[in-house]
Image (tube, rainbow, N blue to C red; front, side, top):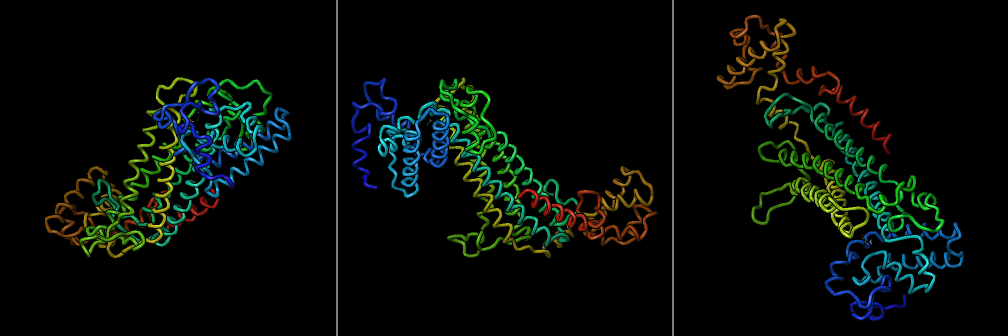
Length: 481
Ligand code: ARG
């Protein structure tokens, strides 16, 4: 590339010459913008992330203009070659960005004009920045969905692999963070598999709905040229052109839907992040996070902190903030395009980037997790986890109504508490003191392993069901690839 930064800045920058109006829309203007106007107006600082999408869209538009006879083959050829050159500069990092040119669309067009001259001015025939930005942004969100969806698939893969290792590793299942009933760690991990499966489904639903092309809606009302919107839609991988030109340039609900899906995913991730923080704590000691996903303290030499899990937990905040931000930006905007909508990109880019990072970090933590089966098992001796099983025994063997059985076992739990022992440590005589018909068979029901094995209703935690669920989960993962 022959052109130097300063040379171009001198030649084109509006700021350098306040008398000069914008080269792309300056016809109506006597002077250039105030420096503050330029600052508030410019989006190039963030929408340069749309460069690849903008080039793809311009190529599709140019080819369609040639095919429909709106643009000559010669000009079309020059434009396509010029766009290739622009792309090379952007990829090489030599492309010059400047706030005076507002956004990525004007940058590409201005540079194209420098490179190929007059023909560049014909690319914008039958197009507006309004349909242009809507198209670029949809393409960008579509790519982000594909990346996040694939990353979620890898996280699910890690969860199934660890669930498989721990199909019969027993730990206390909790409600209200209080000991409830024993479950297997594999079952617990598969709960997250299901959550992330729905998150992926939401991403896919969002993708299917957004995959229509706004291109050709022009400013808002369509265009007087005989364009072919089906052609450009197809070239860009859209299922079809959007039906209504006004909707096409003003809709941002696709981004809102994406951010809503991101927010829900982030919330699900944050719950797992919180569980990792708890499990890794000295009170639980269920797991050890790998060195790769832990940090130390600058003052306390013994520390081993679960920073990554905490950050995954925290980042749900800013991601939800992005959704809130764009919802508020869009609220009450009249049709069609308003410049407010330029503010759609920053929160969307940020949320997508942070969510993808969170999913990757979580995948690493899950894959590396060192599980302390003994600590999980030891925790089962607290909290009378098999009390429900004893009540079920009374119902099933003595035909006692469940409510009555609940009361009997409540009294037995109180006795165990007084003696400071577990239910399984009470003697048959102790049990008979409260319900004379109890036999030694009931005592067998009090073992944690028996309690687990008997939870065999569909979707339950019995190891043989967990193994079957793992098999199905693997098949589902394969089918989604
Ligand atoms: N940079 C603008 C945006 O992101 C492009 C669309 C500008 N359209 C307009 N009518 N000023 O929204």
